[in-house]
Image 1 (cartoon, rainbow, N blue to C red):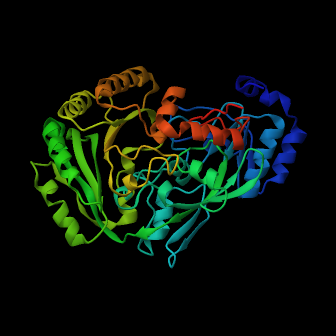
Image 2 (cartoon, rainbow, N blue to C red):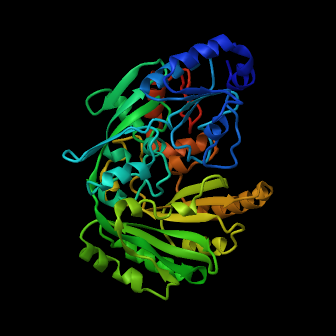
Length: 462
Protein backbone atom coordinates (compact mmCIF):
# COMPACT_ATOMS: atom_id res chain seq x y z
CA UNK A 1 0.00 0.00 0.00
CA UNK A 2 1.40 3.41 -0.94
CA UNK A 3 2.24 5.94 1.74
CA UNK A 4 -0.50 8.33 0.58
CA UNK A 5 -3.10 5.56 0.83
CA UNK A 6 -2.01 4.73 4.36
CA UNK A 7 -2.33 8.31 5.57
CA UNK A 8 -5.83 8.67 4.10
CA UNK A 9 -7.26 5.27 5.01
CA UNK A 10 -5.66 4.60 8.39
CA UNK A 11 -8.34 6.19 10.59
CA UNK A 12 -11.01 4.18 8.70
CA UNK A 13 -9.39 0.75 8.64
CA UNK A 14 -8.88 -0.01 12.32
CA UNK A 15 -11.79 -0.55 14.67
CA UNK A 16 -11.83 0.34 18.34
CA UNK A 17 -11.34 -3.28 19.39
CA UNK A 18 -8.10 -3.54 17.40
CA UNK A 19 -6.80 -0.26 18.79
CA UNK A 20 -7.77 -1.24 22.32
CA UNK A 21 -5.77 -4.46 21.94
CA UNK A 22 -2.69 -2.36 21.22
CA UNK A 23 -3.45 -0.10 24.17
CA UNK A 24 -3.69 -2.97 26.65
CA UNK A 25 -0.45 -4.52 25.33
CA UNK A 26 1.59 -1.42 26.17
CA UNK A 27 3.06 -0.42 29.51
CA UNK A 28 3.05 3.19 28.33
CA UNK A 29 0.12 5.26 27.07
CA UNK A 30 -1.62 5.02 23.71
CA UNK A 31 -3.05 8.39 22.73
CA UNK A 32 -5.71 9.23 20.15
CA UNK A 33 -6.95 12.64 19.01
CA UNK A 34 -8.94 14.19 21.84
CA UNK A 35 -7.10 12.34 24.61
CA UNK A 36 -5.41 14.31 27.38
CA UNK A 37 -1.78 14.86 26.43
CA UNK A 38 -2.29 14.19 22.72
CA UNK A 39 -1.81 17.82 21.71
CA UNK A 40 1.49 18.16 23.57
CA UNK A 41 2.80 14.77 22.45
CA UNK A 42 2.33 15.52 18.74
CA UNK A 43 4.25 18.82 18.83
CA UNK A 44 7.92 18.91 17.83
CA UNK A 45 10.58 21.61 18.04
CA UNK A 46 9.73 23.22 14.69
CA UNK A 47 6.53 25.25 15.02
CA UNK A 48 5.91 24.96 11.25
CA UNK A 49 5.04 21.29 11.76
CA UNK A 50 1.37 20.77 12.59
CA UNK A 51 0.55 17.12 11.98
CA UNK A 52 -1.99 14.83 13.62
CA UNK A 53 -1.12 11.15 14.07
CA UNK A 54 -4.02 8.75 14.42
CA UNK A 55 -2.17 7.03 17.28
CA UNK A 56 0.74 7.96 19.53
CA UNK A 57 2.39 5.08 21.39
CA UNK A 58 4.23 6.69 24.31
CA UNK A 59 6.64 3.84 24.89
CA UNK A 60 7.80 2.97 28.40
CA UNK A 61 10.48 0.55 27.24
CA UNK A 62 11.78 -1.67 24.48
CA UNK A 63 8.84 -4.08 24.76
CA UNK A 64 6.43 -1.26 23.92
CA UNK A 65 8.54 -0.38 20.88
CA UNK A 66 8.50 -4.01 19.72
CA UNK A 67 4.72 -4.24 20.08
CA UNK A 68 4.23 -0.92 18.28
CA UNK A 69 6.47 -1.92 15.36
CA UNK A 70 4.68 -5.27 15.06
CA UNK A 71 1.29 -3.53 15.10
CA UNK A 72 2.34 -1.08 12.41
CA UNK A 73 3.75 -3.84 10.22
CA UNK A 74 0.67 -6.05 10.62
CA UNK A 75 -1.75 -3.23 9.78
CA UNK A 76 0.34 -1.51 7.09
CA UNK A 77 0.57 1.78 8.96
CA UNK A 78 2.73 4.79 8.27
CA UNK A 79 5.31 4.90 11.09
CA UNK A 80 7.13 7.88 12.54
CA UNK A 81 9.64 7.69 15.39
CA UNK A 82 10.17 10.50 17.85
CA UNK A 83 13.26 10.84 20.01
CA UNK A 84 14.00 14.46 20.88
CA UNK A 85 11.74 15.82 18.13
CA UNK A 86 14.35 18.50 17.40
CA UNK A 87 14.93 17.83 13.70
CA UNK A 88 13.65 20.56 11.40
CA UNK A 89 11.86 18.23 8.95
CA UNK A 90 9.25 17.11 11.46
CA UNK A 91 9.64 13.48 10.38
CA UNK A 92 8.97 12.48 13.99
CA UNK A 93 5.25 12.99 13.36
CA UNK A 94 2.83 12.30 10.48
CA UNK A 95 -0.77 12.89 9.57
CA UNK A 96 -2.87 9.78 10.13
CA UNK A 97 -0.02 7.46 11.09
CA UNK A 98 1.37 5.78 14.18
CA UNK A 99 3.96 7.79 16.10
CA UNK A 100 6.33 5.66 18.18
CA UNK A 101 7.17 8.17 20.88
CA UNK A 102 10.40 7.42 22.77
CA UNK A 103 10.34 10.57 24.92
CA UNK A 104 9.16 8.75 28.09
CA UNK A 105 12.21 6.47 27.90
CA UNK A 106 14.59 8.40 30.15
CA UNK A 107 16.64 5.63 31.73
CA UNK A 108 20.28 6.64 32.29
CA UNK A 109 23.10 4.75 33.98
CA UNK A 110 26.56 6.29 34.38
CA UNK A 111 29.47 3.91 35.06
CA UNK A 112 32.24 6.22 36.36
CA UNK A 113 34.76 3.40 36.72
CA UNK A 114 34.55 2.38 33.08
CA UNK A 115 33.62 5.87 31.86
CA UNK A 116 30.50 4.75 30.02
CA UNK A 117 26.86 5.74 29.92
CA UNK A 118 23.85 3.60 29.02
CA UNK A 119 21.17 5.97 27.69
CA UNK A 120 17.60 5.25 26.69
CA UNK A 121 16.39 6.87 23.50
CA UNK A 122 14.18 9.58 25.01
CA UNK A 123 17.04 11.47 26.63
CA UNK A 124 18.49 14.80 25.54
CA UNK A 125 22.18 15.66 25.67
CA UNK A 126 21.55 18.12 28.49
CA UNK A 127 20.04 15.33 30.58
CA UNK A 128 22.96 12.97 29.91
CA UNK A 129 25.61 15.56 30.72
CA UNK A 130 23.73 16.73 33.79
CA UNK A 131 24.22 13.30 35.35
CA UNK A 132 27.70 12.71 33.93
CA UNK A 133 28.89 16.02 35.39
CA UNK A 134 28.78 14.79 38.98
CA UNK A 135 31.55 12.36 38.02
CA UNK A 136 33.47 15.04 36.05
CA UNK A 137 32.65 13.17 32.85
CA UNK A 138 30.95 14.19 29.60
CA UNK A 139 29.42 12.70 26.48
CA UNK A 140 30.56 14.02 23.12
CA UNK A 141 27.28 14.84 21.42
CA UNK A 142 25.47 18.11 20.98
CA UNK A 143 26.16 21.79 20.46
CA UNK A 144 22.64 22.32 21.86
CA UNK A 145 21.45 20.57 25.01
CA UNK A 146 17.83 20.22 23.91
CA UNK A 147 18.81 17.96 21.00
CA UNK A 148 17.85 14.32 21.44
CA UNK A 149 20.53 11.71 21.98
CA UNK A 150 18.98 9.29 19.49
CA UNK A 151 18.55 11.43 16.39
CA UNK A 152 21.83 13.27 16.76
CA UNK A 153 23.87 10.09 17.22
CA UNK A 154 22.20 8.23 14.36
CA UNK A 155 23.07 11.11 12.01
CA UNK A 156 26.69 11.42 13.21
CA UNK A 157 26.62 13.71 16.20
CA UNK A 158 28.52 17.00 16.14
CA UNK A 159 29.27 18.54 19.53
CA UNK A 160 31.60 20.58 21.70
CA UNK A 161 34.12 17.74 22.16
CA UNK A 162 34.44 16.68 18.51
CA UNK A 163 38.02 17.89 17.97
CA UNK A 164 39.28 16.16 21.10
CA UNK A 165 37.11 13.03 21.17
CA UNK A 166 35.19 12.78 17.88
CA UNK A 167 31.50 12.61 17.09
CA UNK A 168 28.77 11.03 19.17
CA UNK A 169 28.69 8.07 16.75
CA UNK A 170 32.47 7.66 17.13
CA UNK A 171 31.93 7.13 20.86
CA UNK A 172 29.03 4.73 20.50
CA UNK A 173 29.97 1.35 21.95
CA UNK A 174 26.72 -0.53 21.52
CA UNK A 175 23.07 -0.03 20.62
CA UNK A 176 19.86 -2.01 21.13
CA UNK A 177 17.64 -1.93 18.05
CA UNK A 178 14.13 -3.05 17.16
CA UNK A 179 14.21 -3.87 13.44
CA UNK A 180 11.35 -3.74 10.94
CA UNK A 181 10.70 -7.49 11.27
CA UNK A 182 10.27 -7.11 15.05
CA UNK A 183 13.62 -8.50 16.16
CA UNK A 184 15.41 -7.02 19.15
CA UNK A 185 19.11 -6.89 18.27
CA UNK A 186 22.25 -5.65 19.96
CA UNK A 187 24.68 -4.03 17.55
CA UNK A 188 28.34 -3.41 18.33
CA UNK A 189 31.73 -4.30 16.93
CA UNK A 190 31.20 -7.99 17.75
CA UNK A 191 27.46 -8.47 17.26
CA UNK A 192 25.66 -7.39 14.11
CA UNK A 193 28.68 -5.33 13.13
CA UNK A 194 27.21 -4.42 9.74
CA UNK A 195 24.17 -2.87 11.42
CA UNK A 196 26.43 -1.11 13.92
CA UNK A 197 28.30 0.47 11.00
CA UNK A 198 25.04 1.77 9.56
CA UNK A 199 23.74 3.14 12.86
CA UNK A 200 26.80 5.37 13.13
CA UNK A 201 25.55 8.06 10.78
CA UNK A 202 22.91 6.26 8.71
CA UNK A 203 19.97 7.82 10.49
CA UNK A 204 16.76 6.04 11.44
CA UNK A 205 16.69 3.87 8.32
CA UNK A 206 17.31 0.47 9.90
CA UNK A 207 15.15 0.29 13.01
CA UNK A 208 14.24 1.95 16.28
CA UNK A 209 17.20 2.25 18.63
CA UNK A 210 15.93 1.92 22.19
CA UNK A 211 19.20 2.43 24.06
CA UNK A 212 22.78 3.53 23.43
CA UNK A 213 26.01 2.82 25.29
CA UNK A 214 28.59 5.61 24.99
CA UNK A 215 32.18 6.14 25.97
CA UNK A 216 32.51 9.16 28.29
CA UNK A 217 35.47 11.50 28.73
CA UNK A 218 36.93 13.58 31.57
CA UNK A 219 35.37 17.06 31.59
CA UNK A 220 35.00 18.88 34.88
CA UNK A 221 35.38 22.65 34.78
CA UNK A 222 36.05 23.97 31.29
CA UNK A 223 36.88 27.35 29.81
CA UNK A 224 34.02 28.33 27.52
CA UNK A 225 31.88 31.12 26.17
CA UNK A 226 31.58 33.62 23.33
CA UNK A 227 33.50 36.74 22.33
CA UNK A 228 31.00 38.99 20.53
CA UNK A 229 31.63 41.55 17.79
CA UNK A 230 29.25 43.77 15.78
CA UNK A 231 28.41 42.56 12.27
CA UNK A 232 30.16 45.66 10.85
CA UNK A 233 33.46 44.10 11.96
CA UNK A 234 32.38 40.61 10.96
CA UNK A 235 34.63 40.11 7.94
CA UNK A 236 37.70 41.24 9.86
CA UNK A 237 36.81 39.01 12.80
CA UNK A 238 36.24 35.94 10.62
CA UNK A 239 39.50 36.39 8.75
CA UNK A 240 41.27 36.48 12.08
CA UNK A 241 39.27 33.46 13.26
CA UNK A 242 40.22 31.45 10.15
CA UNK A 243 43.92 31.81 10.99
CA UNK A 244 43.28 31.25 14.69
CA UNK A 245 41.31 28.04 14.14
CA UNK A 246 43.90 26.62 11.73
CA UNK A 247 46.45 26.29 14.56
CA UNK A 248 44.09 25.68 17.49
CA UNK A 249 44.82 22.70 19.75
CA UNK A 250 42.46 19.75 19.63
CA UNK A 251 41.21 20.57 23.11
CA UNK A 252 39.52 23.62 21.57
CA UNK A 253 36.28 23.19 19.62
CA UNK A 254 34.93 26.47 18.31
CA UNK A 255 32.69 28.16 15.79
CA UNK A 256 31.19 31.45 14.75
CA UNK A 257 27.59 32.30 15.52
CA UNK A 258 25.64 34.99 13.66
CA UNK A 259 22.72 36.34 15.67
CA UNK A 260 20.82 39.51 16.56
CA UNK A 261 21.14 40.81 20.12
CA UNK A 262 18.81 43.33 21.78
CA UNK A 263 20.22 46.87 21.81
CA UNK A 264 23.19 45.70 19.70
CA UNK A 265 21.76 44.34 16.45
CA UNK A 266 23.39 41.68 14.26
CA UNK A 267 26.62 40.28 15.67
CA UNK A 268 29.29 37.68 15.01
CA UNK A 269 30.23 35.70 18.13
CA UNK A 270 33.19 33.34 18.30
CA UNK A 271 32.20 30.68 20.81
CA UNK A 272 34.28 27.80 22.08
CA UNK A 273 34.78 25.10 24.67
CA UNK A 274 38.29 24.23 25.83
CA UNK A 275 38.57 20.89 27.60
CA UNK A 276 41.96 20.48 29.22
CA UNK A 277 44.22 22.41 31.56
CA UNK A 278 42.65 25.76 32.39
CA UNK A 279 46.03 27.48 32.20
CA UNK A 280 46.65 26.00 28.75
CA UNK A 281 43.15 27.01 27.71
CA UNK A 282 43.66 30.62 28.79
CA UNK A 283 46.85 30.75 26.76
CA UNK A 284 45.20 29.12 23.75
CA UNK A 285 42.38 31.69 23.56
CA UNK A 286 44.27 34.79 24.64
CA UNK A 287 44.68 36.10 21.08
CA UNK A 288 41.00 35.49 20.36
CA UNK A 289 39.91 37.49 23.39
CA UNK A 290 42.31 40.34 22.68
CA UNK A 291 41.47 40.75 19.01
CA UNK A 292 39.59 43.89 17.99
CA UNK A 293 37.06 45.65 20.20
CA UNK A 294 34.37 43.14 21.14
CA UNK A 295 31.05 44.37 22.46
CA UNK A 296 31.15 41.56 25.02
CA UNK A 297 33.46 38.86 26.32
CA UNK A 298 31.45 36.19 28.15
CA UNK A 299 34.26 33.64 28.42
CA UNK A 300 34.38 32.04 31.86
CA UNK A 301 35.00 28.85 33.79
CA UNK A 302 31.94 26.61 33.98
CA UNK A 303 31.04 22.94 34.35
CA UNK A 304 30.97 21.16 31.00
CA UNK A 305 27.24 20.52 31.47
CA UNK A 306 26.70 24.29 31.51
CA UNK A 307 28.96 24.84 28.49
CA UNK A 308 27.04 22.20 26.55
CA UNK A 309 23.81 24.21 26.99
CA UNK A 310 25.22 27.74 26.79
CA UNK A 311 23.67 28.54 23.40
CA UNK A 312 20.33 26.75 23.92
CA UNK A 313 18.45 30.04 24.24
CA UNK A 314 19.18 30.86 20.59
CA UNK A 315 17.00 27.92 19.49
CA UNK A 316 13.78 28.10 21.52
CA UNK A 317 11.12 25.49 20.98
CA UNK A 318 8.03 26.31 18.96
CA UNK A 319 9.22 28.99 16.53
CA UNK A 320 8.71 28.66 12.79
CA UNK A 321 11.91 27.02 11.46
CA UNK A 322 13.46 26.67 8.01
CA UNK A 323 17.06 25.45 7.62
CA UNK A 324 19.65 25.20 4.88
CA UNK A 325 23.16 23.86 5.35
CA UNK A 326 26.31 22.83 3.53
CA UNK A 327 29.90 21.88 4.15
CA UNK A 328 32.53 24.30 2.83
CA UNK A 329 35.50 23.51 0.64
CA UNK A 330 37.42 26.38 2.27
CA UNK A 331 36.84 29.48 4.34
CA UNK A 332 37.83 31.94 1.62
CA UNK A 333 37.66 35.72 1.78
CA UNK A 334 34.78 35.56 -0.69
CA UNK A 335 32.85 33.10 1.49
CA UNK A 336 33.40 35.30 4.54
CA UNK A 337 32.14 38.37 2.70
CA UNK A 338 29.05 36.40 1.65
CA UNK A 339 28.29 35.41 5.26
CA UNK A 340 28.54 38.95 6.52
CA UNK A 341 26.76 40.67 3.64
CA UNK A 342 23.76 38.37 3.72
CA UNK A 343 23.38 38.12 7.47
CA UNK A 344 23.45 41.90 7.77
CA UNK A 345 20.13 41.80 5.85
CA UNK A 346 18.51 39.10 8.01
CA UNK A 347 14.72 39.61 8.06
CA UNK A 348 14.05 38.03 11.48
CA UNK A 349 15.89 38.91 14.71
CA UNK A 350 15.40 35.31 15.83
CA UNK A 351 17.36 33.78 12.95
CA UNK A 352 20.78 32.31 13.72
CA UNK A 353 23.53 31.09 11.39
CA UNK A 354 26.49 29.00 12.50
CA UNK A 355 29.96 28.34 11.08
CA UNK A 356 31.33 25.15 12.68
CA UNK A 357 35.01 24.21 12.73
CA UNK A 358 36.04 20.54 12.54
CA UNK A 359 39.26 18.53 12.43
CA UNK A 360 41.10 16.77 15.21
CA UNK A 361 39.85 13.41 16.44
CA UNK A 362 36.91 13.15 14.05
CA UNK A 363 39.35 13.35 11.12
CA UNK A 364 41.43 10.40 12.30
CA UNK A 365 38.59 7.98 11.56
CA UNK A 366 38.41 6.79 7.96
CA UNK A 367 35.38 7.97 5.95
CA UNK A 368 34.38 4.36 5.28
CA UNK A 369 34.73 3.25 8.93
CA UNK A 370 31.19 4.40 9.74
CA UNK A 371 28.20 5.58 7.74
CA UNK A 372 29.16 9.22 8.45
CA UNK A 373 31.69 10.01 5.67
CA UNK A 374 32.50 13.74 5.72
CA UNK A 375 35.57 13.85 7.94
CA UNK A 376 38.15 15.70 5.86
CA UNK A 377 36.35 19.04 5.51
CA UNK A 378 37.22 21.89 7.86
CA UNK A 379 33.91 23.75 8.13
CA UNK A 380 30.20 23.65 7.61
CA UNK A 381 27.65 26.45 7.55
CA UNK A 382 24.10 26.19 8.88
CA UNK A 383 21.36 28.78 8.42
CA UNK A 384 18.54 28.29 10.94
CA UNK A 385 15.90 30.81 9.99
CA UNK A 386 13.35 31.30 12.78
CA UNK A 387 10.37 33.60 13.12
CA UNK A 388 7.14 33.84 15.09
CA UNK A 389 4.36 34.87 12.68
CA UNK A 390 3.45 32.22 10.08
CA UNK A 391 2.56 35.05 7.70
CA UNK A 392 6.29 35.86 7.52
CA UNK A 393 7.18 32.43 6.12
CA UNK A 394 7.57 33.40 2.48
CA UNK A 395 9.90 36.29 3.26
CA UNK A 396 12.12 34.28 5.60
CA UNK A 397 12.29 31.19 3.41
CA UNK A 398 13.18 33.30 0.35
CA UNK A 399 16.02 35.02 2.25
CA UNK A 400 17.35 31.65 3.45
CA UNK A 401 17.35 30.18 -0.05
CA UNK A 402 19.03 33.27 -1.49
CA UNK A 403 21.72 33.06 1.19
CA UNK A 404 22.27 29.36 0.52
CA UNK A 405 22.39 29.93 -3.23
CA UNK A 406 25.07 32.59 -2.73
CA UNK A 407 27.19 30.01 -0.86
CA UNK A 408 27.23 27.48 -3.71
CA UNK A 409 30.57 28.60 -5.23
CA UNK A 410 32.24 27.61 -1.93
CA UNK A 411 30.55 24.25 -1.32
CA UNK A 412 31.25 20.61 -2.20
CA UNK A 413 28.55 18.05 -2.97
CA UNK A 414 28.30 17.19 0.73
CA UNK A 415 25.92 17.95 3.60
CA UNK A 416 25.48 16.88 7.22
CA UNK A 417 22.39 14.66 7.29
CA UNK A 418 21.13 16.04 10.62
CA UNK A 419 20.88 19.52 9.10
CA UNK A 420 18.93 18.46 6.00
CA UNK A 421 15.40 19.65 5.41
CA UNK A 422 13.02 18.06 2.91
CA UNK A 423 15.43 18.29 -0.02
CA UNK A 424 15.12 15.10 -2.04
CA UNK A 425 17.11 11.97 -2.85
CA UNK A 426 20.06 13.79 -4.42
CA UNK A 427 20.79 15.62 -1.18
CA UNK A 428 20.46 12.41 0.84
CA UNK A 429 23.04 10.87 -1.46
CA UNK A 430 25.25 13.92 -0.87
CA UNK A 431 25.01 13.30 2.86
CA UNK A 432 26.53 9.83 2.46
CA UNK A 433 28.81 10.10 -0.55
CA UNK A 434 30.68 6.87 -1.30
CA UNK A 435 28.93 5.12 1.62
CA UNK A 436 25.48 5.38 0.06
CA UNK A 437 25.48 2.06 -1.80
CA UNK A 438 26.50 0.17 1.33
CA UNK A 439 23.61 1.84 3.17
CA UNK A 440 21.20 0.69 0.46
CA UNK A 441 22.44 -2.87 0.91
CA UNK A 442 21.80 -2.61 4.66
CA UNK A 443 18.34 -1.18 4.02
CA UNK A 444 17.58 -4.12 1.73
CA UNK A 445 18.58 -6.47 4.52
CA UNK A 446 16.98 -4.83 7.56
CA UNK A 447 14.02 -2.89 6.15
CA UNK A 448 13.21 -4.12 2.62
CA UNK A 449 9.61 -2.79 2.76
CA UNK A 450 10.77 0.67 3.91
CA UNK A 451 8.66 0.60 7.06
CA UNK A 452 10.99 3.28 8.45
CA UNK A 453 10.63 5.80 5.63
CA UNK A 454 9.96 9.01 7.56
CA UNK A 455 13.60 10.06 7.78
CA UNK A 456 16.31 11.15 5.36
CA UNK A 457 15.38 8.03 3.54
CA UNK A 458 17.75 5.52 2.01
CA UNK A 459 15.23 3.67 -0.13
CA UNK A 460 15.52 -0.11 -0.54
CA UNK A 461 15.98 -1.55 -4.01
CA UNK A 462 14.61 -5.07 -3.45
